[in-house]
Length: 287
Image 1 (cartoon, one colour):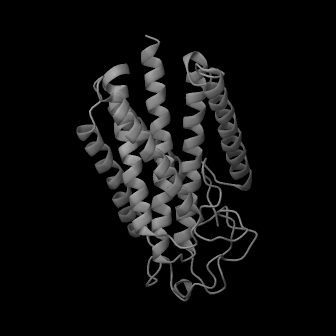
Image 2 (cartoon, helix red, strand yellow; image 1 turned 45 degrees about the horizontal axis):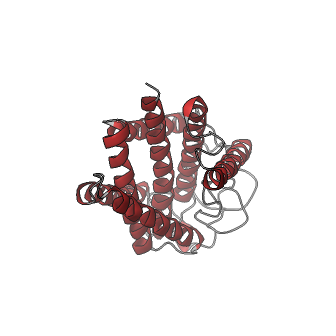
């Protein structure tokens, strides 16, 4: 079973060749409720001893929704703590802006490396996941403070509220089946995410070697359009993450995999937050 992510395509609870959400329960397993997406391959957790003989939520040692919520709260809490500390401790006045921004870029690079390590590890490492969250928080704190101070006062809070709104909206839509994670949906989101990232990479190359804003995809009216597209892609990836969590609980993923779920959700929410923050900055700059 796998999810999707604009950075990581291998992240998921099992490192097999399957696709997230397309499995049928093993013989003898009890699954509550209708799963309209469960068809095609064997239970990816058939070899997990915790997936035997008991319904979801009762198996000792199996992942539960409470595990996912608690680990996600810890991971996001670490991001928030890192952001708050960097906001307070790293000054962004004219004399110190360059130094603080350099620290933020360094933290972002460390976070990116750790995210790759976490993505490719066969077993989740809580320490590495929380370390990733801390460095990501440092980066977000400085960037948010700069945007708030120099571009649009209150932008950070607007981005936080916007991210919460997207999360809540997608969760409601997913739970009520307004969003149905099918093979076609999965393929569309993967293609859109990969295409978007390749386009942004080309834009970045033009910006680095040609100066300015590259091809102009991240500023002005075109920047608003691409910002909205990025947020929609992030929301779709969030739905895929919810599907991975649902399948993990249904098929008896080991409890430690709740850290994988927390890591995936954190990466997606950081993506959405940054895109909303960028969008607010662009709209404020156009006023």
